[in-house]
Length: 613
Image 1 (cartoon, one colour):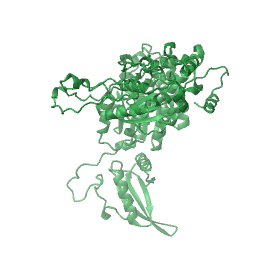
Image 2: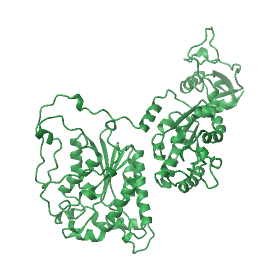
Image 3: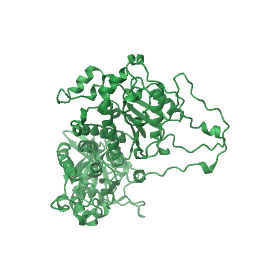
Image 4: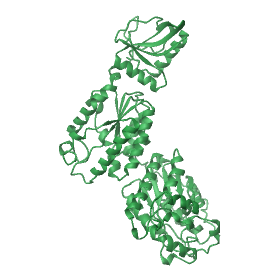
């Protein structure tokens, strides 16, 4: 870290000058001059990564994920960059390496992760050396909260960009027996005191994030011969770091070789040969391909619940709906179409989902082109101790993307939990709801609040409305339904329009209720017909040439098959200011359905006005 960078970071924090800042790790930046520093004594015996503590493990690799790992790091794991790429490439993995010396977690998030559209299914984070602390745990909560938030934000961003498994590398905790003199002594006295603080927080965060795995460099690196200066890796340290991270990812957790010969089997996973940089790696000798053994095959891992639920969304035949219910298990468990009486409601709830998950899967919502989205999300975030600021930012982005498509967003305030619920999260829920109210004012979302009818005087969810302290009984859903049904019905007028029949009745003239599969010149009357089912028409354009008006009608019919299922297309000639125009119109609406149809076309870049006949 250069001095100018330290001053920039210091300027962001108004605290006493006596504060010892870990961000001032000038010596942590790997510099060419460090190559001249005397190396740690090189141990003669080869080293291997210790097995991963099950308490630090995350999800297993899924063969369906694909082999791509994204690494963001400071100068420490940069010392293992080429070794890591080589070893992962040997296993068929693509590696994306990003980072620079002296980078903080927040800077790594802003400079690298948020610039990525996708990171792949596995992400490795080796950051934390450049963080802010005070000695003797002074103001520890303040700095640990700041550290936790930066880690939580990084996890959320990686998940949003597709990471299914996040591996975070701990810091090497220095002890006197690991110090060989020179710069290492300075590193030890100036900085080693806060490395355990970082590891402590990483383990605490892992406890509430099942998708996170800890690569325990701290435990593996309790030996000499790994670094130039007690922190930065020499070639031997790079090999061990690679082995530790590979173990955490799970690339070595594969079936044993079916080859019977012990010598050949041992070559499948040889221990790293790290006696020195000049020693060549052992190379596996070519062997004849073994005959396939069906009993050795491993069945593919079944998709998780989220993947199954999203797979069902992908099977939908619906290309348009007026209302989407979006959220977690509270949303998923209700039959919204039936209990609200609106047949144009799609349920996009997924059990255990959180604000980052909803943001990630918005394509499943926006492709339905809804007029309204009812969003209930946040209780799982709160239960997982995700900071309020992170939740609000995820929801802000969600609302923005939905409103960009023309949908009205109804932001439902999060319900409290019952007194019997094991986690006492209601204060955090109340804080989140207050932030939601402010967010709604900022984003023009509509707040829906029905908590008063469901909670006790002490602010808990009433027992009669709860199955288990958090999920709702039918009585609870009744209150929810009654609160939103008038709003749902406001957007559901299109639901009263039946879908076009599969075949027309036997008649020489097709009935008006059946949309013609192909619009011809003869099917568009040159003058306005009588309106049979409503006193409103919609107009989707006006042109000097009748053929252009007919072409606009064709386009509207192609785009809005469901919206126009019972509408009559026609062109209408008018003269305005001496100019002849042909209006492209559809008849057969009442006021609500006409306005809803125009709302749909406007969201799809077709100008539309609703006109009373």
